[in-house]
Length: 218
Image (tube, rainbow, N blue to C red):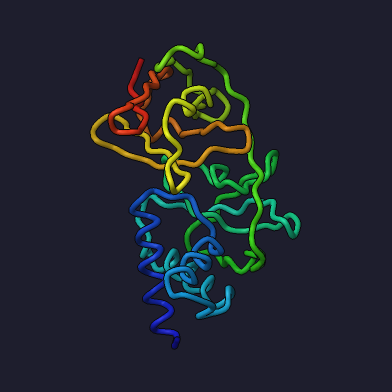
């Protein structure tokens, strides 16, 4: 594929990811491009350059940020730029390494420091849940964590929803907002409070009919 064709495919994938409020790295885009196009249509470095260009050229929504963090992969730990909306953290990426320093790169600065390699990624993530529902309940009230400003979805709530084929659970917030998230290795999901509003407590309820989870102010 020539550069124009590759850029068009990358743009389409980035648009789909940002529309879905996904947290992603350039290599996530590389893998998706290769999946859609049925093979190795371009090197990771080539695709990565178009992802960076999409951010610098403001082709991503203005709510998206570019943050340099450490990702833990099967090949080792690497620093990479992660793209995320205001309602999520770069550390919501499933490979985000815990206890790393988050640095948000201001618009216009050079982003050549992205060193994420092309091998397949493994998985590493985790969190501590502040509240656990009893096994018999389909609803629980959780508090927003003070330090990270997010809520933790207990795994006992997730266990009451059939595992989606994509591995990503659907969460419904007030005002018709929807977000999709995958569990970390501990079986929990973290969601930034900015996606939900400014309250300190939220009610997390299983929606069995729609196979999703509703979150509303408690």
